[in-house]
Length: 470
Image (cartoon, rainbow, N blue to C red):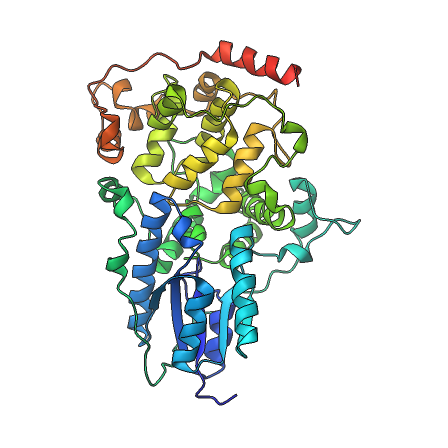
């Protein structure tokens, strides 16, 4: 291949320069690089908040490339057709990208790779989205892991390659292909007035993600294990947003955590375990792709969950279940685009166990509302809390939001922060919920706080009875 032949580097959910094997190896070739983002058949399915956050990631990354004398070429359409056309336009001999592992992305990528190969164009997929390729980690019997703890034991001492530094320069092509305008795509349109609220909480881009990691390592990591379940505290890394869009690489985080562990930081190992929990999700979504749409345990197929979108589901979505901790967590999601992990377990348990609603209802709603939405983590998280998934919480383990609040929000700070009706003088985040939520809900901070959709004792007994009758 002539050194003047361009390489197309196809960016998807990996908007960074460092810890990016595909980009590092392409830059080292000395050939011209054409960075590309395609609003393709997978990205078009994203929910309102993920699409809004995608727009922020693309805009920021495009600006970063411009600062390096490069560009991000934007195209919209079927990935296979767009990339074939672009390769022919530019004379590119290679198309490189970072591997994805969820079933929709795999189907897309297989189609792209086959079409490029048929056209005589080299297609190369590279690691970078996870620490361990799913097929490289196996049980002693050679199968995939179905339980988290054995997987952690298997990988905790495995060598993880050091992340590549950001390239110092990216060779530009002689002629740049035409690019569509990001503004014309209006990716944030579905967020309507909620976009302005989310903008105040988003942490966008590689530089901001690195700063967020450094801030966590400066202090909160020491109490991570003991305080991470307290939603009113800044006790977690909050890196899920940046990991979801690839603004920071998992190897960067892993090695930072390993250094902290070697330095004797008390919460470092538990932090690394949570990073491997994300790995476990991708390990499972690769080996058992049905986890994204079906009960991972088929024996749950006859469980009497309701999929009806009734008044009770609406009140759950609105953060008006009458259960303060559940409502605070749901409102946090509308205001910040994220939800504390303890909150995710509690709202999931209340929906699937107290309310007996299908986990798919919650999974789809989170897909619509979370700026840190991740297809593998979202699917596994919902099945875990519902009891139908791998390594699941037993069905009879039903989170009691009242006792959870007593333990993890004893002073009620988290509830008051987000539930205006429970505060004497509502703060900005509590009031911001009414600016972020859909106008059609017609909600006001002057509304009376509702009675519970389902009482905690009543819901627990109903759930246990349903479980006993299976």
